Length: 126
Image (cartoon, rainbow, N blue to C red):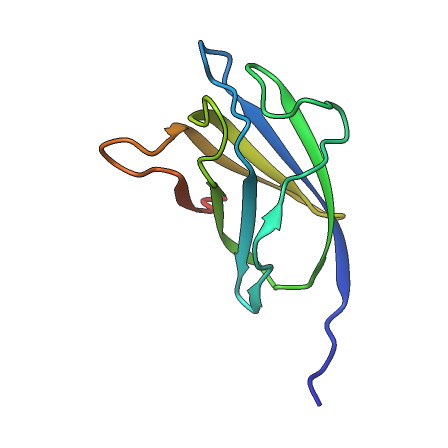
């Protein structure tokens, strides 16, 4: 029988860049990868502070309860390219744990063009 891991409440904070057409209506997902496992795809569905999430210059906050995956090494952020204007310019993602916060600089467009950047894997650099 598999041993159950403790669960941890986290916040995922996402800032959309303040530039023309930066927002998206696509469905967005984050996966955290740790030394002891990964969270699986977490949909950033309901923003704590905005009804219309991922808009230009805005910060959105999402809450999750995850299994302990050990020290986080990487984050995958992705979107499904759905909706009009699905291209999205992400500034950063922060993951707030009870005892620490991890900052991931994204600072790029996520879009399906000549090069598909709808999924980005970003290493945590501390």
